Image (tube, rainbow, N blue to C red; front, side, top):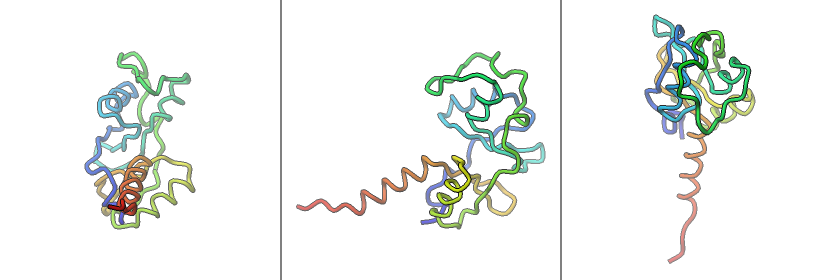
Length: 143
């Protein structure tokens, strides 16, 4: 199984000049905790996690219900909170390599690249879903 088989294709992105408020709204709308950050030239320059937003805001946010009001993080830019030059993975890499990189580096996702182009994102959740699917296939129910 390769990263391509388990990744989320065409991930929602955030532009570098956006605010954390916009990023939090996007995360809430789509139900995610990671956004790849693209430059004006559409190059991957970072990854913004919900945890990065929490640190930038300097206070705890309720992770079950993200704030929907625009005042939170309106003056804080994505680039000031994101992880710059994130660890990436190629789509044809084995899925276990993605898991190894995430565990080894204490990160929750990897942008998936094809050359210089962002084509997806693989998260802990994606790997867990794949593991559950594989486990179900391995379990045989006697008739």
